[in-house]
Length: 156
Image (tube, rainbow, N blue to C red; front, side):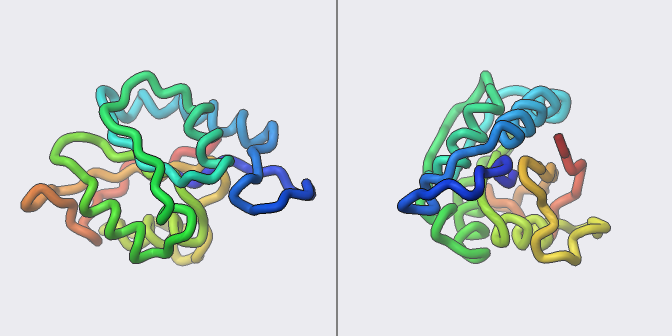
């Protein structure tokens, strides 16, 4: 999932401190109401430590998680960092929710996908508060990159 829309134009010392806009909070809240139609039960959640990703997570109002980790590499990292985290943290049968940033999150969604997403040719196709859902075969307790079956792209 890409974080909700962040405020722009505010003078902040650091990008990591940018908060969500009202539209961003509303968009994430909508995704939080849709997500249980697709995923039920416990979740493993990894989230960037940025203010806007934390606020996105809060706005989702998820009731069930077995593990929540704020991981610096989801803010500072690149495509390879995201893939490494996803493949090492994934657990057999437990949905993983990743809340991160473009361009890495869009690149990851493109690479995880085995069936073509019509918008995946664009490097930053995930808009704020968009969530791409996949189902993966698990081999040796790890997901197989490029083997994900795309289920849905949730948009507020």
